[in-house]
Image 1 (tube, rainbow, N blue to C red):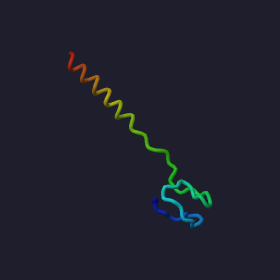
Image 2 (tube, rainbow, N blue to C red):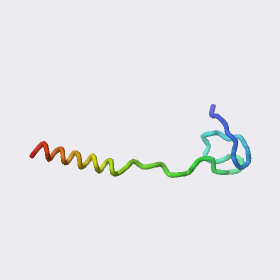
Image 3 (spheres, rainbow, N blue to C red):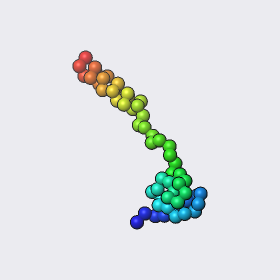
Length: 58
């Protein structure tokens, strides 16, 4: 059973998993977009593989 919390706008009980209040429609969760993984990590991996292949075959 999900735990309940109170809506900051109307004080109605709502699920902690809810994005909006079912009573007044207020936004309950932070709506920031999810963080993406760093593209720099992938770039560094590709460069590492290329340099490793060059070292192996040269």
